[in-house]
Amino acid sequence: VVPDWWRLAQPWIAALIFIALAASDAVDGYIARSRNQVTTFGKFIDPLADKLLVTAALVALVDLERLPSWIALVIISRELVVSGLRMVAVAEGRVIAASNFGKVKTVLQIVAIVGYLLKESTLLASVLESGKCLPAGAVMRLAGLAATAVKNGSIASTTRGSQGVEALQSR
Image (cartoon, rainbow, N blue to C red):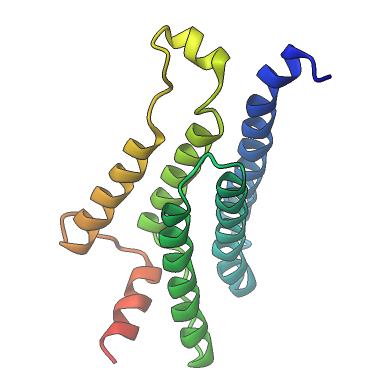
């Protein structure tokens, strides 16, 4: 018999573990940049680590039936395409660092995943007194709007990563 407090705590424990993992990745990048220890390996592995973290969480959410599988499929497919482009660039002797847009997208994905982890939390529902949690889907829509704005040139990116993608696209 599972105690009620454990059922209440499970989504929060999962969310805290996920947040801790995501934060450790962010802190690692910050430390590397602040100490001017950015490496080619780090530029390649940091976005890959972000993708693995998000992919693992999405697969777990689908398995727990908290996230529709089509959402995970779309996000994971996009991540695989981007990783493929990075590998093509590496094969041509180029490294595509994560752009600011990519970092914003990852943060929005992390927020949405935490939202889906807490989606069925009765504790959160009672705190909000609405019976429903904030929709994590709205965060995903915001990420889509940000992607459209970047694509249309509304948000200019000055990172070398974006220039690398543009260079690949022009070939």
